[in-house]
Length: 254
Image (cartoon, rainbow, N blue to C red):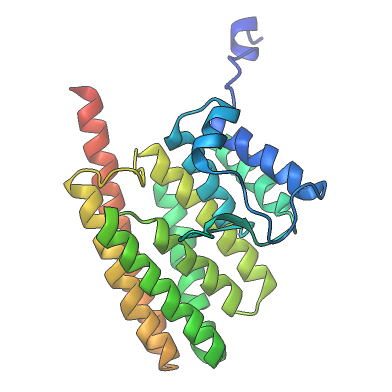
């Protein structure tokens, strides 16, 4: 028979960033925030939620991954509500997988199966308007890299793959994989507020260059070449992510 201390295990509190995500999504679901509305400035949200700027940005990045907000620059910029449809199902799956403690290896295996198929479909189905949107996404990613070597601008690339595939099932799976990726990157202290260490910079630069190569093949409707390029890209990014995980483990032991 199991002892009480084996049955009743410590309860792990939710991450503050996840709680912020849930609060903002509730406001969207209730109609208190509508498409086109702008969230308060980051400094104000930090005070309201009483969290650090890093925690707030992690929450906002998650909402970007769900496709519910878009971060725009300029005097009229900020975090804009772009989608009132809740991704509750994706969040439930994310919570389930997080409880199961998935590994980086498992995440990579799933992405290695799904993303080559996505780019193959996108290369066959992409429209002229979507090509312009893809170009804009790559340009935005380059701007983020020049500014602070961050991957923030790169996450939209995967959302566009999901959208342009025109397959709702595959799109939902890719949204889930992106949510899991963001969680992994944050667990490895890969913050957009700093350029990070050498491993982080190598990872971020490789992400940009790989996305550019894949985008060029997609825009040229070279579906098989785009598929093979994505397979090679996933292998490279997986190795770099494992290097970052190894570096963090070694640092924690010292």
